[in-house]
Length: 253
Image (cartoon, rainbow, N blue to C red; front, side):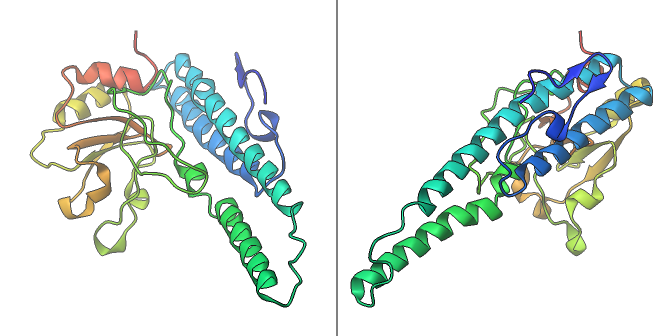
């Protein structure tokens, strides 16, 4: 793992930043996530609505994930090596002991490989817990394993996926930039939209019907970033909408 992911105008993602045992393509998955993170930060600055400080979020967010993924991958690879090296003596016996040995080996192979190839937690459960551009609210992050995770709107987590009306994916409905998910249409989002316009930050309001919002944790508003991570959430507008916009665009003082 690299000690740093950025130095002034140089940024490194993917295998240049992290390389570990070539196991199930996790390095590629992490590299794609690096690029997704870095690309929107660069675009925000180059398009003029975020200061250079927004780029500091890349290392702050991605370097801890690199460490997490490396430990998952290495621990899992070592467990698989141990499993393959421990073949029961009676695995080829025709009697009940052989059948029992084969069943145990089969169960162990399934348990470890289903995590390897169905690693939803590793891909979707990671969260950014020390970012300068996320407005945290003190809520605890849900834990995750290689295979499992709990969708959550805790700021820093991936925006939970839900199916909308007409079987449309929420991710297909999100704006390419910021999207304010409004689960309670009674909340007037106007002041936050106005604050975004004042700073030139692209933001669109997307109303979500209550029947479609089961996995959005009951908050009236969820601000989703261009990389589909939660930047902020609340049941009412923040007291200072402009301060929130400055936080998520890297201009907070």
